[in-house]
Image 1: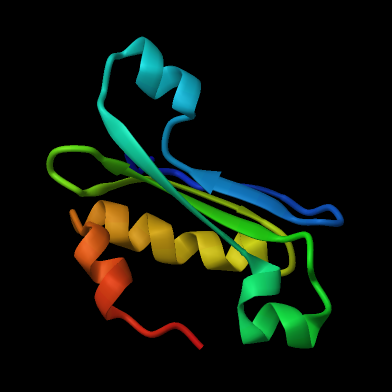
Image 2 (image 1 turned 180 degrees about the vertical axis):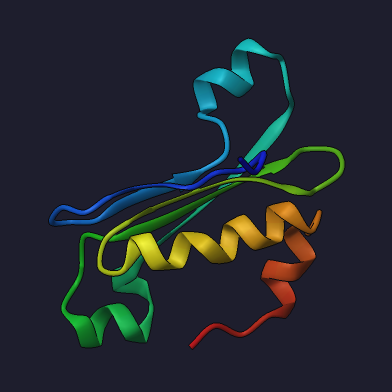
Length: 102
């Protein structure tokens, strides 16, 4: 089993995550920063009519590597695999800043 195994719940809305929870990171005293974006803030979310979906990414505060991806909303169980790949390849915040997602 991979170190970063994604979990998905097929519901309305879909819920998916890969990585630890904020509670686990806090308990382990791992420094982190959180970034959140909402589906309603992007064109795809507006087209889908999904104004409640969100993406939450958690990065290590010092190395800026991605540690966690949480997705709630339409196709969350498919989108989480992007986060899984970035985590597995040791990618960080620069990947998110320098990549266009359509």
